[in-house]
Image 1 (cartoon, rainbow, N blue to C red):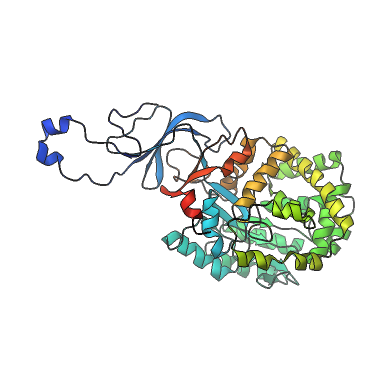
Image 2 (image 1 turned 180 degrees about the vertical axis):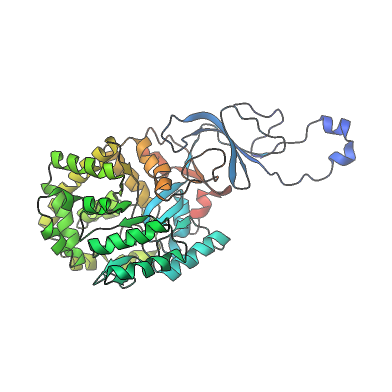
Length: 459
């Protein structure tokens, strides 16, 4: 690292002494303009690509973007200097599966989440919130939105757009294109003819399509052009000999979800390897949301709930989660819970093999649903991905560059000159222990600094 001769930590590098000799005292005494460059100095940088960290690096930021980065970077005279000796810097995290609410915005930021992929929300609300974040009215991550989900009949959720025939796909896609969605989300009652029509219309406009599957298996969906699947949906159906009982179970949401979660327990590693290899050939991205499956497997375990980080969730929101009511509506038996926990082992096996075989994995949390706190649940997901067998580096890639690639967003997810200055300063090495991703000192969003303690102050 090459440091400027006149640099000064935690401030602005002063004018050189020869100023008074050359320009005269009066000229030098004029107030200096605000520095246009900020230098973050001395950190170890994980750049999001999975490459070895850059040690003792300098990151120069101007107008919200990185202009230079590396171990041998000269700091311009007059730059504001932020000393980060011995700390770690990672790209701003991207949560690849959320259904954001306005109260959650600052919570995501406090956990280092600088972008989120919202895969289903009231269209008017999410468009308005995206505008508020963009205008700086509220502090929050940048929003990559889907608007309302598209579903077959009968739609599971009232906010979804219900399609009755493929002819209706064009209007549904056009309505989302009009509000500049980042992706289109298909839901569980979407049939193959509806899916094919939506994919055709969306891809013609350059919009990717993702799906929470229920009536179509994952391999059929991938061959139909779906770009990503959520929750590992459709994988069981693509692996078993006869998926029809699973399709039938999805007529009711909880029946379908329970059947899917049970189904993993009966799958063997050879069959899962075959499914993984076939899906990878199609280029499909998986967003496993292991933390959601883990939550369902422990809904009857009070110790599990008490061990979760929900510090950022307001009391009234926690009360609205109403876990006893969820258990009643889902009608999950003790035998189901035992099966779900066995299924988690097979889910981990599949995700591990998918990544090892070259498949694309993106981290997502499904927050802020029950027990899935914004920000904290993405950290939990990263820990579960490592538990499943991914390296800490691969887990971080799944929440940075891999997520950015899924979003077709080339300005985030990687730290490099020309990219947005979105990054997180950590006090521990995340490659040695993924839990260190939670030891956040500072969040930088488009060059603007947010001390983590300040973001958490009003909780």
